[in-house]
Image (tube, rainbow, N blue to C red):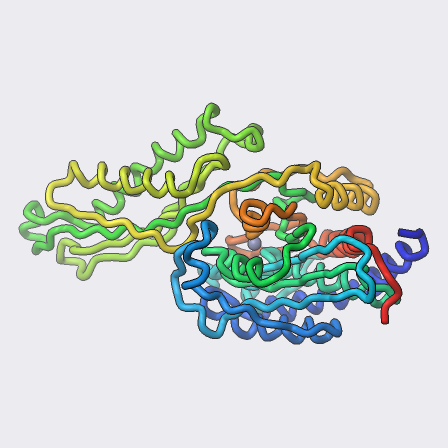
Length: 425
Ligand SMILES: [Zn+2]
């Protein structure tokens, strides 16, 4: 790429800085939790249309996808929540194709009274934007949209197909990304601007995840005959406690994938939800807990599911009269690695170093992203690189606006360098 084009693209990205922040604020205002992504997806349709592209929808067809090894059993129906994508087509295809993807779904905000400002009213303090989804990962979406716009404002456009997608359910199944992957032609690379861990980072690995739901049935009794009953909630807590030993075992040094050598606790088991009981003066009949169990790359999610079943069976065996069943809904996902010497990773790293003057650090993520699909099932080089984040999935989630701007600049040059450029129509 010649120096003039490069300068023009960066100047355009700088001029669009406030627009990026405004777009991010627009996206954060949608409470796009599971099952409520519709309005944010519609917003993305208009964002793509504003770029001069034709937005399209992809149905998440569970019957067709169920046979795919990357499929996860869904929690709810997909009607009305189809992911959106748009494809830029060059006049003359000379470069490499690229997919830029982001998820519009966000995790629940938790206790809203703990937030300094309401979670869906974006607020800027000390050069950071606060709001649920601001960092994870609506900022990444705003960054790639502006990156593409910066080329256009500079009178250029990618000289290869550029696919842009806004998906759902990254936070619970990944089936939105799977549907998009199956619908679009295989790109030469996939880049997902997921947030970094608080410093600029390139994802080099991620764990897998299994979601398990354990339903315990006890034996009801009046509390005056408490000894004759079996307390389903207490049994559920005893089952959850067993996973502490499992977690410690899975984090042992010998089990650690080399990419996680520097991380002493990559595998986490989270007791995320609990419900049960009927009455304070009755021994509870039923309880259900929801667990999130991490999976080391190289160890399969299906084996993890069998481990979970065995652990639960073992835990209830010693408890007279209690029964437990395990259901798998939500993530059934393997871990994977994103080698830093892949061409797309090298392009991003070099441009980040050039623009910021700092080396991009490598990050092995103890959580997962949609990038696994492209790596594991499509053989497409992929990675994640996005703005710095704080408290994602927690209270007062925020993204750094300087970092967002730098990432936008890097993405703009990545598009230009990867796809090549031609004069825009
Ligand atoms: Zn995310």
